[in-house]
Image 1 (cartoon, rainbow, N blue to C red):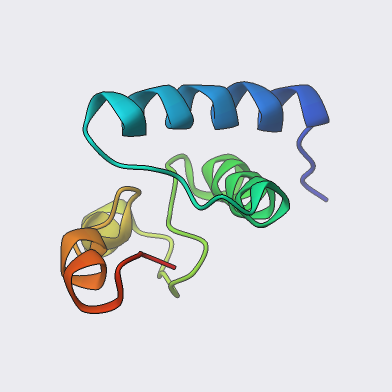
Image 2: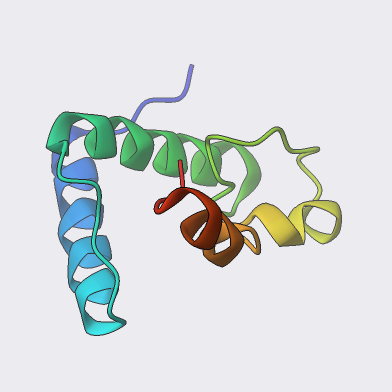
Length: 86
């Protein structure tokens, strides 16, 4: 069973928030929601070796999943259409 620590989740959350802000993006203000997604990213990194977007189904093969490695290719289109990605 794969697990990630709270410390790992918090560290990645802080990094993602800093990176997002530096790029003109903002994380969802629902911190608990974002922390669950961050945990999913870390679990997928353990499983597959890369941060597969936890809101999309992947194949577990990097070349086939390249478009859904976070930040995925669909982020900007989702932002344009919905004002947010997942």
